[in-house]
Length: 133
Image (cartoon, rainbow, N blue to C red; front, side, top):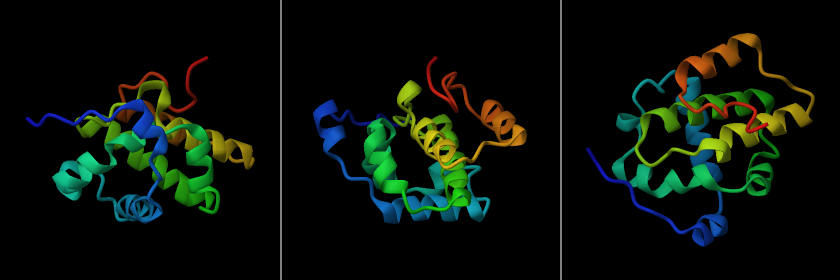
């Protein structure tokens, strides 16, 4: 068992979202390599990128603006499973899954019934995918 590191809120909001890392997340999803993210991401990556789970919506909107709808769906899959599998990646109602889903909806896209069921089956986060009411 490992212990995650704590990042102060002020530092979280100053973080830039690494688009190369997001592309890696998309690739892992496309390649169906999400079953054991603890093996796919190094310990250093797990610690380095865990604070992304708490970055504000505006930064996510900017970071994913030019990703395709399909890429957004892959990011939703990745971050749903990352939160469930990786220590320190818990996000609750601040999850990137919520921000990515909202961005998809603003584009006119919607999660399919199958995707909604998949999220519910693969996450204990009651706020996914739409956030708090």
